[in-house]
Length: 413
Image 1 (tube, rainbow, N blue to C red):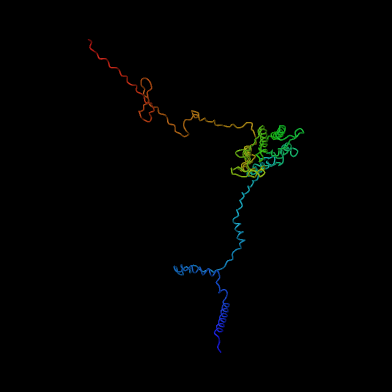
Image 2 (cartoon, helix red, strand yellow; image 1 turned 180 degrees about the horizontal axis):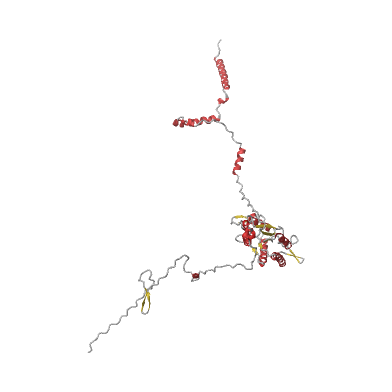
């Protein structure tokens, strides 16, 4: 029986396929396909062929083989979060708060009265004298008060009790921001800054200043700054004129702070130089209130007359000496110490105030030059013509007069 060639080939192919499938299944999956890390390592080994050719196995002996491990990358969400955190600007460091020293029992008291601006002034003064144990700042301001609404708070009635309670060394006043209101004069309402209104308002301000003067207490009155509203700023200027005239009439001190809160054209500004000349925000967004830097700037203006009155009491070392050794506060002494003043020297003074030489110069005596006397009078200086010290003008030689020749004697016929 003859078997066909096609049937033998078909059976052989089927058996060969079955053997191939069995071999593939028998090989482990790890050896069937190299991992990604192993592929990278094989590529790295191929690149080292040049180094192995040049240096041999020294490089491999020097560098120990490290096990290849696959590292899991961090989630994208965490990477984005860390990146945002690192790019965020750091918070500005706040200056450390100044530690206020312990005040002496007999420290000089600065009494601050007025409206809400006076409260900011008291805050600025407390910062200014925080390191002065001989000065204590007491704030007795009333934010909504003024001289118009005496039915709400009457300063002329309340100030006497405050003075008796605190016995201040100096009184600082700042008021007027709430006084742009009608005044009742003789049962009639008067508009702000009308003639009757100004007369009544001035009388109330003078009564307050007189109460301070009767107790022989120095009065320092701070003027008002400009405001965002132009009409309000105009009223503040009028109020400042009333305060200045009243305070100076009792020999008090009026502090004009207007120029510190306006620009070079006299206009209102939100930002301006602070007490150190650095640009800062001085006013609030409403154009009325003061920021912390603005309060400190107002206090900087008021410090000048206060330091003159308090003297050595503002020194940080006053606790070691004792404030009881300081002289009493006198605003205007009866017998002031004489002040020796140096008279001004005029630049047009020909004698230069009696001095002809600069300080430290060595004055040499002037040697008189010899003069030649001729014909009974002083002659010219004995100098040689053409020398540097010969300042005489050259003398002109008078032309010689030609005398006519004498006529020759002629023979007479």
